[in-house]
Length: 246
Image (cartoon, rainbow, N blue to C red; front, side, top):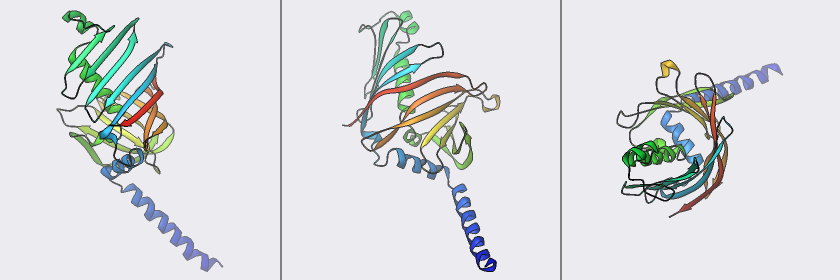
């Protein structure tokens, strides 16, 4: 019996080895494409309007709800939240024009505008921040994004993952990013960034859960930690999400 099973076992071993080698040889671009196919199989991201309410939980126990609108079809963005008993609101339209308000009023004093972070530049930064984080992994297709061709198998948050290194053209950004994907489904499970990787600065973000709407799988809760101390910085939790196509 042994001499009949030995070739079969050998064949199975070789097959598994080949499959493992093939998995290790997946390119960075192919990994990204597979992840996008998981999260946005119909390619809707550029056409959707995303309206969400997020609770931002902080280490001091405070919770700040934020209302965010990302309208990709029109290129529009809006953010509002209450801070220090005042309602703040930032808007960016499809022409890149901005509006900012405190308690529905436009602040004209330049010093107060800077102090309250109501400048046009701040409105655009908010837009870029939320559009990037809540558009992942699709946003990794944006111009100026450099995908490392080598995919690494590593651990993240105690789980085996596939890691993708991403850098950006100088006019886009200077941070180094690593994105982590489930090795079978290619779901995005987390990411980290460094300002200076040699110093282990920056932060990492652990994703928990998926919100499924209109055929898209949107990563839900995000917990933020420091790279060098593993210190919890806060968690962004989905309260509600509405996805529509214009």
